[in-house]
Image (spheres, rainbow, N blue to C red):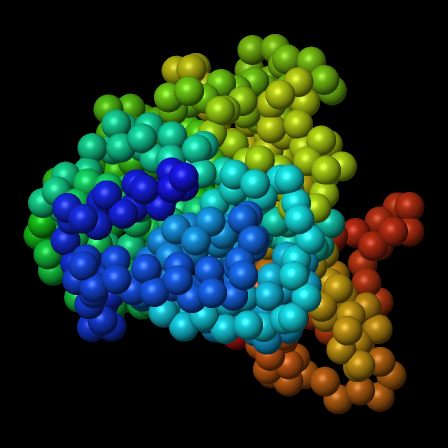
Length: 469
């Protein structure tokens, strides 16, 4: 039986248009379908088991979609891994998933000899997407075929992309936002243009004929620098991943005639749980709007619904959510309360009945749309032989929403500086996880109980300018 996403993508390609990238790569739909068949055959020839996780290297290339389709056709579960990910990151994810096969374009490689363990959770799964967790270790979010296909149908009705659209996607396909926008474009038979690496130049070039642009707010902050590019055909902007401020929303009016859909959601809940549509703007900017089709929610404080005007944790009920966290049933169970997913975000109702985020119950940093656990960076820094201790935190930033600052305690006599430390980290993790500023101190800041105080990092950053690039 063909997996729902494989059937959906295959049907779309049979009637759609070529897929392109701003780097000049282009793949006609029939060529892509042939490539997908080759991937599926190559996986089957290696005795692939149903529901087996397979790493799929992603670089926002048209061939990435052939790799995903082929993986799904073969009955495997795709684990998107960026082509530029540090080798240590790739190996860590390989150990976490137990994957023995890797797909890169049309190439299928054996990267381990032992087969992965059988997991009931992966039986009807399409994807395992790794996101940062509050424990410092990335969490493997398992997304089912049926739920994701159903969510795409909801988004199709909500956003109404057209066959004559040119959809420009600078979002990486390793993240759910980039995936659903790309799949939705293909469903509608639109022309999909992928951006391998975000830059003002690449976007400006793509905007010459793009009618739909998807991006996180930090991308728009960068894009709207002086001079802002023209976009004569742009009719629709899709944004999310971080709060869209009223100031930035006003600046985005530069793209005259482009309607903005501001979207909020999590990988765990299937994305796009709330939407602030054009009809609720501009007075609604600064809120996440109202729930999308099929989604329910509640605001809870200490286990009880909050009173009007009070702040509580935003909890989401949805039929489009994850199947669970990979190999972590305890975390899966703890992430829900009465069937509602606990987002960790604090929110309140506005007078107009919309939902407004007011903070986060957890310490996750939202840097340019990337969700990063400070503890994960703490632990990595602590591996450096010249570092005694490290503590990271998010600091507000006008362009990226938040940036990462790190307080670092060096070993006595160590000559380590910020340039050396950045270079070291770039060999071990993704660039967006490298702190934007380092503050070298004799000790970590502590609170009244004597514990390291992450909140004090932000206070220190506000009063210091050392080691800021």
